[in-house]
Image (spheres, helix red, strand yellow):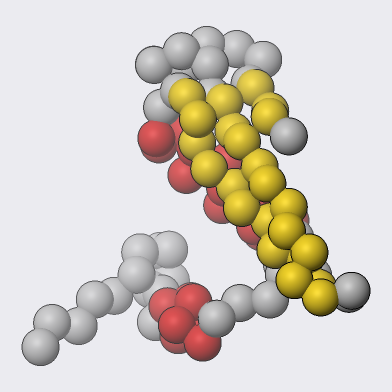
Length: 81
């Protein structure tokens, strides 16, 4: 499925392509990727989408750790080794 924004951004209209894979009878994986437009707009779109679906989306352990390490202002803390 392809989605397109309703207004032009810095680099044209944001276009998002999605592909749905059935992993098991009750488990689906959805790939969401930017196919056109501004990368920053895509990140905003993706964050909004994932926040809205947080109750039904499965996350990896790494993604959960990143959220736990996020600072109160929403910026992730990075530890260098």
